[in-house]
Image (tube, rainbow, N blue to C red; front, side, top):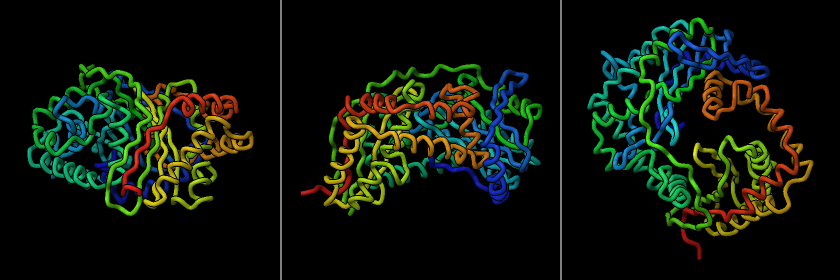
Length: 441
């Protein structure tokens, strides 16, 4: 999910979330997921726990910013920003005031492939909270004043991104690797496209994206299936069965280009990227283990050790897998002094080649698997994280039993698996290299 419009946090929910930490850490040891189907046929995955009186619901719809019409880039993002800015008989101020009064959090956002929403509430206010969510999902107002305010916020972010090294690097990487594909279009839009968007555009996009087609829902907390089912119908049953989404093709990534963007800053931001894997690829778990050893975020990864610990080139260096529905990326990143940028890029490329040609030792593989399986429970330290995971599992088609079998899949990864996927990703593709900073002599 994108990040511009965070949830409306409240003190009451925050306090309950802190209490929930221990409770959900315990749940993580044995997550039991129920499939709930409402009388109107709306399906949700539920993790029931009554330790604390808090309920988290996450949901997503098929189609994200790739569904923006040509010339209306940023429309889906503006839609996400505007859905809770007044609905039904409630103006923006009345809707926001009601959420604050009830200590309820409702939020929407978009990625390239899907449109996301969430609800956070305490159990005593579940009925009123679900009423508000139903209004936002089904009867948004799109009044001129709050929509203009959201446009201004998005334009401010676009302006800020023009001088942000990380944002410039990200745009450059997308442009270099996505080519003319729909993924290359700006999710935020531009100041020009946002300015031209009207209420009728938002109404059209609302009708196009918010349907029961591809709807996925995850619910966690103090609620049982009998209570949840009618709420699912209240919020989602009135939506259209399906809509006519724009077809998005799979993407053959471009790679191997080296691009420098000049920016007067003391540090150079570096991105390296090669084609990665989609989440349903049979090699994904092997790639996940391989990435952990290469640069997956711990102090023992090759990137961290070689770039930071041995040479002091950067405060950190890492790699990550980014699976989309129609392609995947493996991205490495670091930031360093301008005069040491070339050296840093060289060291990072050496680690990619080392993984592709030599691969890890058995000891490194065993340590990686122990960390990945042992730290899995940390992903479930709040109800919101579990709800997001439930939606992510459905979107990836991983099955309702994934929590139970995930660690055994990681344990089953062999040295040969890691070597095979490393060659597949790193030996057969020349990396795209993006640097943002001052040109070196």
